[in-house]
Length: 245
Figure (tube, helix red, strand yellow):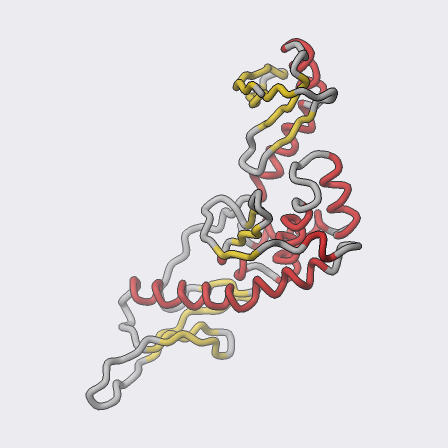
């Protein structure tokens, strides 16, 4: 197998792609979640022939790149001060700091809990934004561990054969530009920040990644599969982008 990075011009756009040559009879074009383009072509295919196929699929390639760009987390930096609102499962909660008197001879222990529309933080100073952020972030990650893995089993049932899309494991990992990904070994990785999104949007992300266990790329077969198991995926995707923008 040989690999090279080349580009082709389509109007005002310059499409860069990674060209892999293998002993095969067909040419495959894949747009990866990071926007990169991968082309697997027959070993004897000419560059002109490959470039021609790229130009013919250019509108689709550019559309996929735009879609993935929109899919990336863009939630602006949040403030961790009293009165600021944060999303949890799509609902807004306002930060409230409450005083807590320490027990005799014992240190004050910080705690976060939901109380009637508030994320109530106890055991920290009103103006200690670092402590507020640290404790609220830990609370969100704990809630992510509680909720996100359970959505996997639920969404596996969307498929005709749930066992065929059962990942080898589920791991939570903060990712600045991804809501989720599926590793080559079949491990599902989810961004714990996803727990801030509405449940139907979480299910969209999980289902999208489960589809990759059957179709590893983002070609036509992938979107046909996603459409078959989640017909309203576009509505959910747009909602995710709108709510988490």
